[in-house]
Length: 149
Image (cartoon, rainbow, N blue to C red; front, side, top):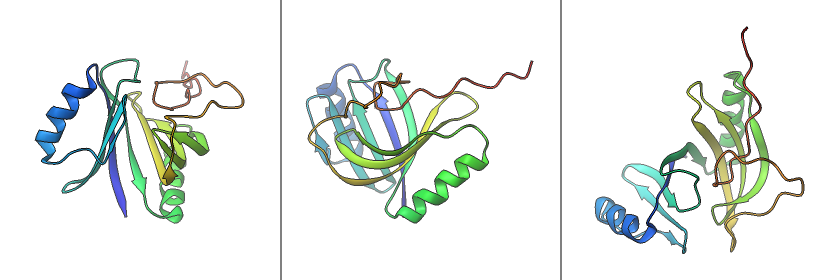
């Protein structure tokens, strides 16, 4: 089953946790000094906030899946959209071990598809080869856009 994912960059985590906990009617399912996540069932959303983004507001959107075949299906859809899938593979990000793939939509919004495998004690791992990062939330830098002219 798929769950819509939203990650928002915030300036004041404690104030934002208080706001979103009131809005959602529940406390976060994961809370760290720089990160909070709510796994909502109605609507089915993985809503995360952190102070690790370069700007406040929506950092990225995505779909979290339960099964590897769902991840393969969504990754193939992204590839078929011909927008250049990047950052595929196993990653430690947002205090979780996940398999994922990234794409930027025509407006430049980062989208991730991922399956969480386990919790992690660190926010993210340092890649063996230093990749430029599109945001502070583990999204690798997308390849340069193709120019039509």
